[in-house]
Image (cartoon, rainbow, N blue to C red; front, side, top):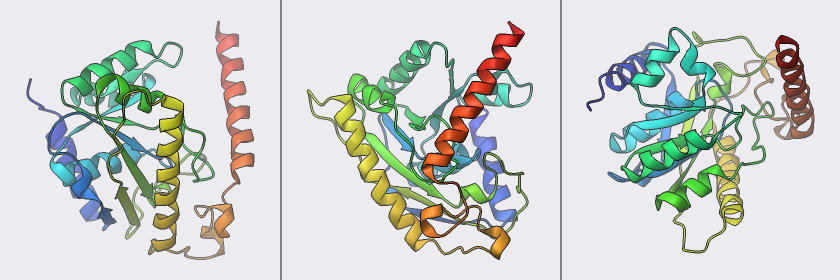
Length: 256
């Protein structure tokens, strides 16, 4: 079946990037395979990361990425039809097996599947703990893992901050690493450690080479604490995530 929704969405995104003069730098585009399945694994610092990670894959090999995303997005009146039309994969967090099975089928069919192994946006903008799902998908499908690092996207729209979708001239780095091939017998936990180590090195370099700087003392919120910014540390961010999850669970219990 032809992709009728994805091309116009890509075109609209590219037009928006140009209108806002988003200064996108893509490194490693040659690592995107021209064909065949691949698990595109990205860090998660913004609600717009799927756009930029997908743009990197598209620019690298005209590949369309099928992202795994929470099913709430598919139930929305506006985003739902778009997500389904682009053949993204809904994830029910109370039962992730159907989504996992759908992702493996897509990989075996030669699709690029996008995964955020941290599961949620990192408030610290540093790498959180990784889930092993991406490594297990690669093992079950025979597809390589493609590490991707994004930097700068948090300035546009991230958790706990107002949207700044009209902010102009924001530099955005999209870094695509060399594919990680799995050998028979590789354990998902060990593969995930290798993947996270590679992405940690990439993130460190993306941050060091990033051309953007805070506009002033009130604009340091998007800079990690360890780099002198005012973003929360990993420990503080984790505590905030746990508090938010507990509050959501309590609200669900009250509704039931």
